[in-house]
Length: 492
Ligand code: UDP
Image (cartoon, rainbow, N blue to C red; front, side, top):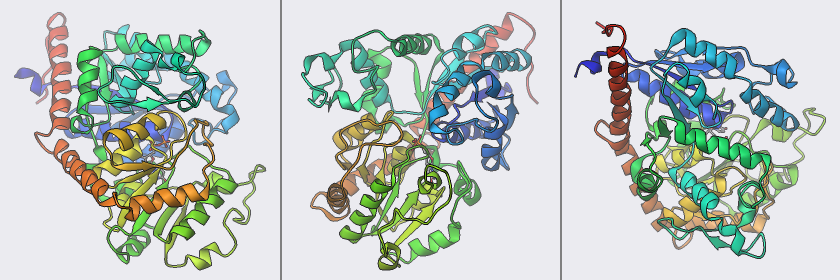
């Protein structure tokens, strides 16, 4: 077909948070590897963050000025990581103010397609001005989108008398029970609020967009992929897990940030451990526990006696005055007593490199979607410790649908800082996932899923088929549009 020779141009516009930028960057690399001219559109500080992982690729970066002044943000705050928590609402406002620069970029460059994060509902209309199809990028599961849809439609939270009483989410392929405490305020109550209005805007933008590109794979959640396509009647492509692609070491070690540990040192330590003997603990790029929670984790690790790699975010180690200080969050003598048994990474960890090491037996995760998918991709069972956002839904998928994890027992959504969990609960869950009576079965199920994940990203696998289908669709559209205008330019 002639359109296979077209030089298509895709623009990728990620939201300003690591959990959104990392999969979008991988996605752009994947499109570029198929001969697409791929360009990431972002602001200067975010461009600097991702440029390392784009070295030796053909992906371009196009920058526009971040609207700091318009929303009262100091210079330098251009993403969730660099913005103090009390200014996060301003960052959210900034994402509304990006319409003009994106409009100009689209007008000047006229790409064939704009893949824009779900966070930018306005992108559909802006792209529409230039007859550019906007694809909504979902850095979450089909499962989460289906649950959220049914929550809005059926409002099952009306049938319970307290926030902690479980209710079943109706009409889903599985029996999923959740509580009001596990959802944000605007999802679990009736009154119309500004957030509801925003939800409405977002949902109508989802419906108006050309389709949704999910960072997932069909065999992971087939019933929910089907539900999205057949019951919700929406167009969705499922392309992942991309942590299995691009296996050159440098890109992986610095994926999303400069690693705080030398990868060789880290791998050397892991090499010296028995297979499946290490629990890897990381809560993603946003969640930020207080010192007493960190201490509970330390006590639990000591008590359960398993080897560990524990990632502690840099900002967790600072007091309110932001001064560096002695690590008094660690129980006295902890590092001496656990010498040789554990590794604490203070800052950014090379997560995918660690997770795929044979010594890693389980992953204690906050259930950010990327982390879940990265764990699934390498067949590692999980202890689930949701904090906020889609984490509670992802926990349900991992523990109830896939049955490859055990919950640590978090009851309540607390944005960024999380609900507190006692050391006994952590110890119990870690022991269960590492060596409990159902540990082997969970590992076997996780390994089987990892095989399917590997297959999904091979030539002819479902993710690659979906990728090709999307490219072909945009190519055909371009041919049709060009047929009404100028003669089509073919690449050589
Ligand atoms: N990540 C990493 N090193 C870290 C922390 C996080 O490489 O020390 C990566 C992780 O592999 C994942 C992303 O950052 O790709 C975090 O995304 P996720 O959706 O899991 O959680 P979020 O950060 O959005 O809460």
